[in-house]
Length: 414
Image 1 (tube, rainbow, N blue to C red):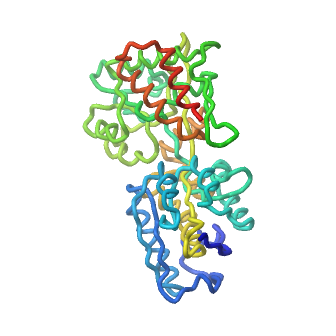
Image 2: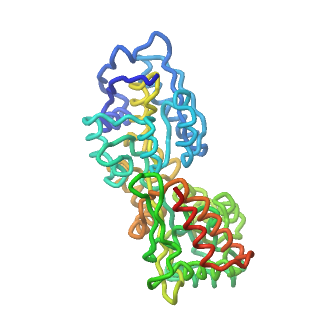
Image 3: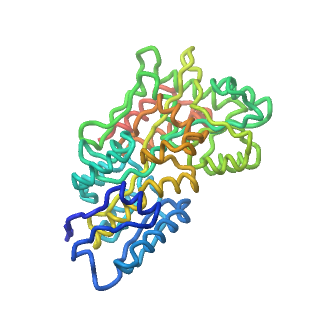
């Protein structure tokens, strides 16, 4: 049965101060949160964040050692499908977990997240970038703790091959890559990236009022840019010897072996790309691409990573304290230092180090052409299937309009 306890959490400001200086007196927890035995908590986070989270968990346990004994375990869990795994066994799931913001409405509706109390929510909102706080909310109610404000994508490029002018258009980039017998990469197996071609065309995709199903007009046969125009543009790009559809893992492999000299990715790969290219690493907004006889700015989905507290946790107050510790200003600074991820905390995001990051600067430039990711679960597979056909040069020979219609039918299915 669902357990309900009052949350008693510290302010982000207080935790930032404590994490930074290791001093100060904390307000006490309620009796229900002071068990005879150890406080057992499970934390889920991205596999690549394990070392960082283990360090943060260790500092949390050290700070609170006088108030409780802990058994805190970490398990890797993809942020992109955290919702599905958690809802499969809420009572057996993690107490504290990282997830992508597009899952917050479903988690709240399923009762996996309780609303954060008004006073604490006000502190969190004032400490966080407004877009990150909005991403952690359903309507006007805050349900999660903003962690990063960088879950988007932009262009990485190798300055040994491209100038700042070259990377303004995909056409020019593909010419240069082909001449150098190298590649520009983008992942067309992921509908997340494929949005780039449709987002600034006047065609639309999004959630219906039910919060579950989608509307989609990507098969439009009217207007200045039609669905078939985008499909033809994608086929032309795929046909270039300077282009390759590559997954994120393959993109990094190509960056490291020199076969890929530019590609679309996010800040999570910033350190790896910088390590491979050194002083030649460049980052910029996405380029324009040729479609319907014009240059169209490539769009992007944007979003945030959040920390959730399981409403079924046996130790909800300690879980909430750990969540606040993870998203404190000091630990968001540490996350940027170790992982290159853009903070959601206002003070951390405004630091000179963050502002000087090429990846963060590129993400901010691309934000002018981005949309908060809000699509239902049936968006992903039909779009990936369509894009896979385009990446392969339309091997079936089926009409582009029929493929677009099939994609939209799948995306819009109820």
